Length: 181
Image 1 (cartoon, rainbow, N blue to C red):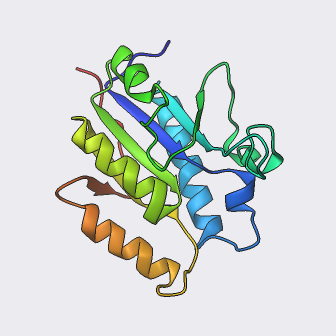
Image 2 (image 1 turned 90 degrees about the vertical axis):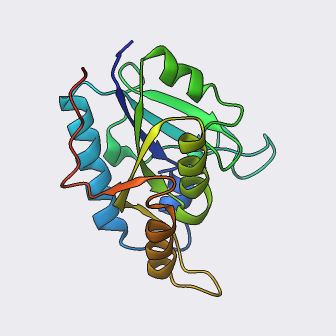
Image 3 (image 1 turned 30 degrees about the horizontal axis):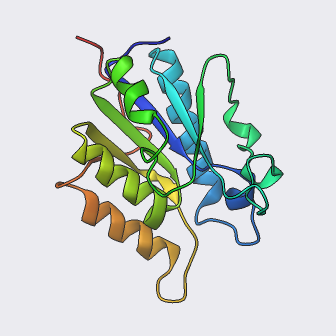
């Protein structure tokens, strides 16, 4: 088990969301930035957690469904990385993530992935509430347009709303995983 004061959490970068009927905003750039974060985490020997959002066994989002499989570009390796299932917007609810972070000595979580207004937002707020220093990567989370707002507006709104009370913002390029003390 890798111990570190830092952890990277990549949320719901799975086939059914990322490659679904509607393409996420800036998909190529966001994926590139997430891959950069993964490379930085691995270089710094920081644990990487990948969340998969699933639904009931009889739904299109069942755990066995190809729609819930993580996209291959992230090069997930289950012997090195931690992949976990979640059924709620929070990566912490009913998942054991908090315990795994505590067991590894994690004090700061870096968050990226999908979807900004649901799972990314909720996970940022809960991580902060649980006492983790939380960093949201402003150019490594995404969503799709909805009937009221464009994806770009949703992302910008959440970057502004979450910054300060819940997270510190960083970009994929300027993020540095702090050395353990």
